[in-house]
Amino acid sequence: MDVDVVLSLHGRAGTALVLYYTAVGLWGLYLGIRDSGPTPGFRGAVAIAVIASIVQGALGFLVFLLGNPPRLHILYGFAVALAMPLAASLVRDRAPRGQSVALGLAALFTAGLAIRGIITA
Image (cartoon, rainbow, N blue to C red; front, side, top):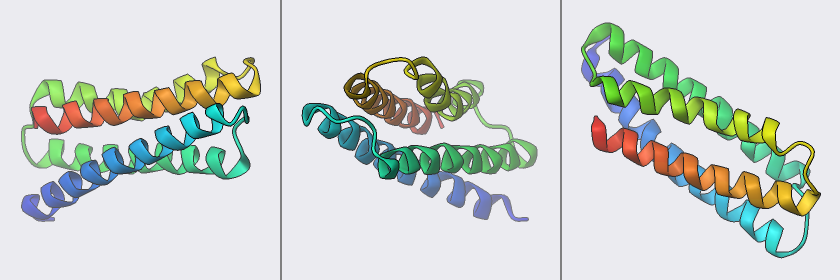
């Protein structure tokens, strides 16, 4: 596989992750403002974000095999893939509104991690 194709896919997927995590984060904050817990749709969106992060990581692994990416970039990649599952496990026992707010903030934090990853590329 051509390294330029993989780099292009990895870069575009990174941008998509930033936008998607931002939307999910705002959705979680909106639910919290409305004094609502995470809806099934919101939980599904979080699951999709986590799966997309793992796919992004697989593309990053291909880049690693085909080239030599910056080490800090790899650290941000791992952080993006692990942030939401960690947040979901930590907020499990909170009140429903608190779960929405915490997951929303975690998604926005993850978007920031993805932005930092892009910057260090």
